[in-house]
Amino acid sequence: MVVLISELDSESLEDHLEGLSELLHDCVHAGASVGFILPFTQGDSQGFWKDKVAPALSSDRRTLWVAVVDDKIVGTVQLDFDLFPNQAHRAEVAKLLVHPDCRRQGIAKQLMSALEAKAKALGKSLLTLDTRTGDVAEPLYHSLSYKTAGSIPDYCRAPDSQQLDATTYMYKMI
Image 1 (cartoon, rainbow, N blue to C red):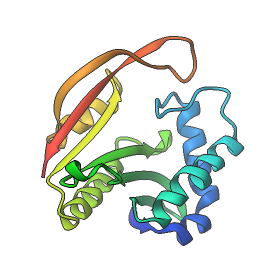
Image 2: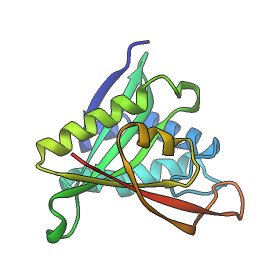
Image 3: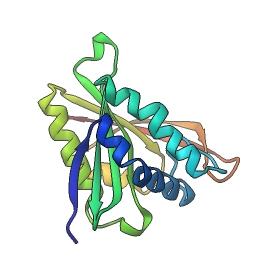
């Protein structure tokens, strides 16, 4: 399997809107805790990319990568560096998604490698993120040398129930 990792800008985001919307929709329906709850429609997914991500890309406050296999988007991750002046040395990892059919094939690691290289190029020395405690992503981040800073109980609602899940905050010095 050949995976192509590409950085998108606001214009290329529009060209990939359908694929990104399908990816997010499929991940949320597979239980990904990335801020959305069911019911979650294709329109909801498209709205996220158009209303939240596109403006941040246009104003150079965020970067976005996609992983493509056979002309299909199978993964994505974002680097958010729209932080306060006293935090100019750091950035946040956001919305690492890999399609459920493509997991455990190294795609997330390739996306994170591209993100970390960009963060270094931007002069960042610290990356932070949060992930649902106990989620499949938590061991992935540990394997990439992210350290646990702590967790917060009842942080967010599960995508498919009323259950409240804890989140784990993690960081990496780069």
